[in-house]
Amino acid sequence: MKQFGSFSARASIEDLLVTRGAKLAVVDVLQPAEPFLDTAGDELRRRIFMARGVDGRNVCLRPEFTIPVCLAHLKNGTHPARHAYVGEVFRQGRSEGMEFLQAGIEDIGDADRNAADARIIRDAFETLDALGAAKPLKVTLGDQSVFDAVLRALELPAGWRVRLADAFGDADAMAAQLAALAAPALVPEMPSHIADATDNMDMLTAEIETSMEAAGLPQSGGRTASDIANRLISKLKEARATAAPERVAQLEAFLAINVPLVEAVGALEGFADAANVDLNAAINAFGKRIDALQGEGLDPANIEYAASFGRALDYYTGLVFEVVDKDRAVLVGGGRYDRLLEMLGAEKPVPGVGFSIWLDRIAGGAT
Amino acid sequence: MTVTLALPSKGRLREKAMQLLIDAGYEIQEPADKRSYRATVTGEKDLEVAFLSASEIARELALGNVDAGITGEDLVRENVPDSEAKLEMAVKLGFGGADVVVAVPEAWYDVATMADLGEVAASFRARYGRRLRIATKYFELTQKHFSERHGIQLYRIIESFGATEGAPATGQADIIVDITSSGETLRANHLKVLDDGVILKSQACLFMRSNEDDQTIARLRAALTKLVRF
Image (cartoon, rainbow over all chains, first blue to last red):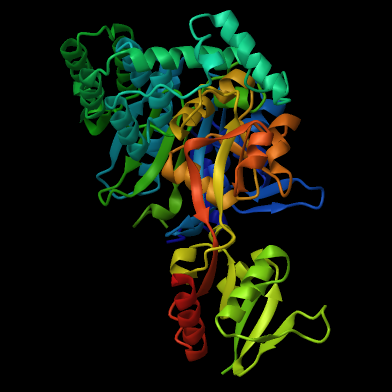
């Protein structure tokens, strides 16, 4: 299984990636843990190998490459740039093992997102091919920005849009949210002086401010009285609004879309018609990416679009894709992370897209 | 074969556990030297008592260094990975009751449930430039409750090993996960428990390793079960 582990095998994979116009990145095995926990959330703590240094800072064995590559890019990189890597990543609690060999490319700073998306899918596909991955390979593509457009078009309350967008990419969480959406919303219990103030934003904010002061809560750095007041008022509106069973059915219909990419635009138009909503902007943008894929010589007939496919990490903003082999093993995961570089300290948004190959899963590949 | 029963080494848990054992007919011979952490039981040649800190009891049980132990369920669930499979909760002893709960500032009038909290957590970073912070010593229980049960991923845990209820006021964290028995400390600190924020209803229990078939321990278990039932 470790057929790519040798120095020469790694060197030849590096060559493959470099010939695709990427520069080899140098990424330490030992990484500060904070950027990973801060971007992916504390749930990651269970899945990485972390230790506390004598200086009190947590370090971890590299659990993936995207974040360190982005950090290195921010330190000394100029946009746009393409970075390549080959090396081990370390994860806990997986049946396959704890140490995995990965290779991939991160394409950072290219504002032509469709072109960059298409190029990265082609890079992934052709690199797999060159590594001898057994065919047929199936590419599945998803796009959170289409889901976001659907949420807006369905005119769901703001709170629901946040919750549903957060659940996107996690089938269980989504099912739970849809079930909750179908049930009538509850009015939260609150003391009378707050309940009495809910029809007056200023009064409500002042009441909440008083409560916060009484509790000695800091005045800055966290939730503010006006944020709490705003959310409370929209929550009350949601509770008063009649539950909309057709909205749940429409969301379910959208999430069930799973078609060859050539039929995706038609399926989305069909959904928009049936739901009587305007999704033209999102559908046009989606169609342009399909054009870009064709421009890269990729046949959309070999690619599937799954409307529910996404990653439950909030820095993935648009395209996500994966390549599976005939045994449904995921050989490649990739996606667009336009929010990540800002989270890592960039002063303004920087687009980024990349992919990673799980080299150990390539069965019967070139040795 | 000699087996070891671990008891809490101090505080009310120790007193209650000792009293319960006496009531069950186990006369513990406290060591002559009060500072010693070992004791024997009259008429029980094969039973040895070790006094350990309550959280170490959980760990030592999991490692197999002691055969049975009385400690809080919260400590076992927190400190022993896969504790349901590894250890058997043989007898709930009816004391040391306390809940591990998710508590938020009272002034968060818009947050009553975990679903509300999930919504707040999801947009926290965009609004305040950082993740929602949770002060707790219960890393495992928090992660299970937030991630596995409620699908909430976007938070950071701030390690807190004391005075956790003060963390929101000092600005160390936004909310807490902590243990509470009466809820008084929470109220005094203007915190409220979410409607579905009880992670675990804990109490002191007799734990033993799964598949434990030692006769001495079986007798102890039977004696404690009988006592607690009446």
